[in-house]
Image (tube, rainbow, N blue to C red; front, side):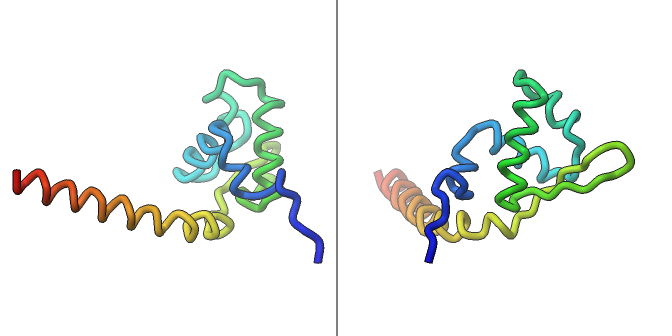
Length: 106
């Protein structure tokens, strides 16, 4: 069975701050590439490259709307990330609960 390309994993994709910012923006709803690019100091081709990577991983989808291409978040593809991070969230909540208890008893 062939191994997945580690350079094309969702984990690696979201490690990039620009791609995380794009995903954060797309949580608000679909957006055309020009609107997405206007929020960054990077060039439009650089943002298009980030979008291509996210699209290849199916984290975003692209739909033609007239002359524009609208990008939309596909959150189901982030499920593996959410599943992986959940135990850490539980750990931090328990740790903060312990800290609260400690501080209240001091």
